[in-house]
Image (cartoon, rainbow, N blue to C red):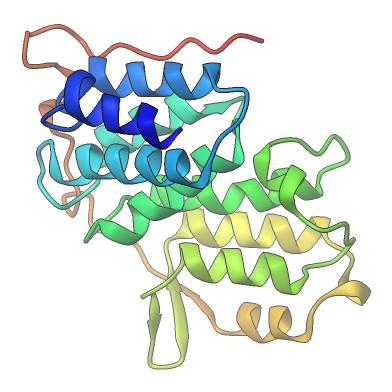
Length: 218
């Protein structure tokens, strides 16, 4: 696999992932990999994060258009396809200086989907069985919400807070990790100004064509 990645770096993507076509080609390669080595996982996540965050406008940020494309590409019916794509989501959010509330709410919603009666998605597959919010869930949630604590309050948009309430309603209160109640008690909501993040022409490729979407075999 290390030799394969070297070939990709040297011949297929010598300048990195530079277009939506390159990005979708990398997703297709990932879908076709029966086994994924640590080297491949690192290459996949870092290459796509670099393209998404720093390779397209607005540089350094994920706006609504980028977030929409990423969510459509890595998920079906709201649930992220694979653990590697879930890591891509989290890493891109960590690297970006700013992300829209729609993306953080989407990331949080993976926990809710894992608690529903018809639980599904990559997060559900990785999560230890627990009727309540466990330490595993808290680690994930704090990774999504890093940097939103302000003066002892967890400052969330209404949509983010709504997802957390949905998680709380689905989980068994008697089985919660003690830190979950502490987290919920600190939640405060705010209205984000509509012009904080604006859509960009990111959904149009350099060739002037609309960004392609990924097709995943059922």
